[in-house]
Amino acid sequence: MSPTSASTPGVHETLAALAGTLEGSLLLPGDLGWDEARAAWNQAVDQHPSAIAQPRSVRDIRRVIIAAREAGLGVTVQPRGHGAADDLAGTILVRTSAFDEVTVNVVARFARVGAGVPWGTLLTRLDGTGLIALSGSNPDVSVAGYLLSGGHSWFSRWKGLAAHSVRAVELVDATGVLRRVTRDSDPDLLWALRGAGGLFGVVTALEIDLYSAPDLYGGKILFPAESAEVVFGAAAEILLDAPPELSLFLGLINMPDIEAVPELLRGRSFTQVDAVFVGSAAAGEALLAPVLSIAPVIANLCSEFSIGGLGDVSGEPQDPSATLDWSRTVSELDPATMAALIEAFHTASYAGLTLLQLRPLGGLIGDPDTGADGVVGHLDAGFLLFASAILPPGAPAPAASERHLLFQPLDDTVQSVGVARTVPSFLASGQDLSLAFAPAELQRLTEIKRRLDPENLFRSNRPLPLGPETRTRRAEPGASDALD
Image 1: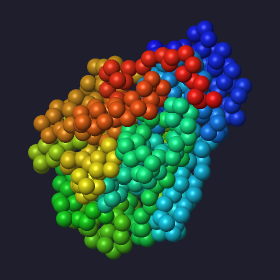
Image 2: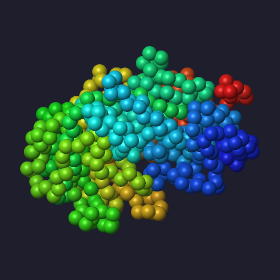
Image 3: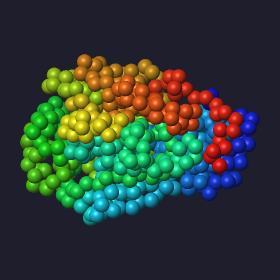
Image 4: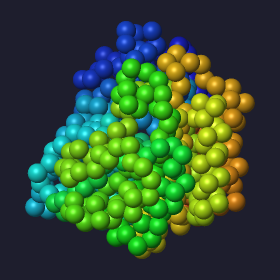
């Protein structure tokens, strides 16, 4: 099944017929609103699908699958545009924003969440319940997209990687059947969906575990940029003995000199520590005291908060922007390597690097027993590193030489302590799942993919490595009959 344009004879007719049958909508290139609808959250990714479907029902999704197979197209799902990693040639891009159900069962401690629901919506619904979900740091990201790609959570040291909190998935498979996937109905597929979820169907809803956490404390602490080495060292020391309920994200950031940034921060560089603690304010303050005393504090925004305010801790941008990202997992960062990494950030800052973040791991993230029920598994690593460069509005994609200036200093610094595996949600554009999973896990995923979607109808934003089992091929005549 080679990439196919919407203008190829037969394809346009199939897509035009599809548009007339949907309860939702279908956009084709040139339609009003096309450019807005095709845009990824990361505006550095330029997506050009053959069509964009916005289904409103399972029946709509079935019709999209029928049309895609008849036209020789693939299907890619992006609920809100996060995690986009390809130009999408020869695919129908499916936006599941209409699947917006949120049901919270406080007694049984689980939530049912539609595929289009962002974390901010779910977390707000959890306010006052004394329960939390294993959310990441950005409330604009969809619950489904985050969990199905692994999910490194604020609470991962305490409860393990967030994908393991998925207890059931409802999806429409390649034959058009709506499947409810649980440990009892299809344990292999549930294992695969916990980290490689975009490969097997169009997800409509998830059921996820909730956890008791009546008290939360944390926030952002800002220090001078030149304090990074001592602050990072002190924070790492804290986590050696701290309970797993404490998570710290350590960072260096260059704030832009623009009016949207508060005057106190505008055009300056800072060391930052973002903290979340499941427990009382008194206990959290005691845990953070060593890092607060080791360097001058510019701002300490830590306080008690409810789960609906979790996104305020990191305060990540929620509006789309053009970014270039880099991530690595490393076994350890001794003081010398930590110092070299900080120096590498300052070197790359001259080329436009905006952010370097270090996420200390440990706790249940590294527990093999906790990770045995999902492909995302566990991580034998000490730190997850993330760096990002935010491009000016309208700036062209940088050449390879410019990317080299941004990220090569970081690569060179951590080369000797790098770990092969990372969380799939941290893969950059163009990277496949071979950087997240071991060969045995990739083989098991390939076998599940062959069983459920042998024609590779579903094109994940984080694909399997290309091989004979995963190359696309055109459906046989009549192959869509089972979908009617």
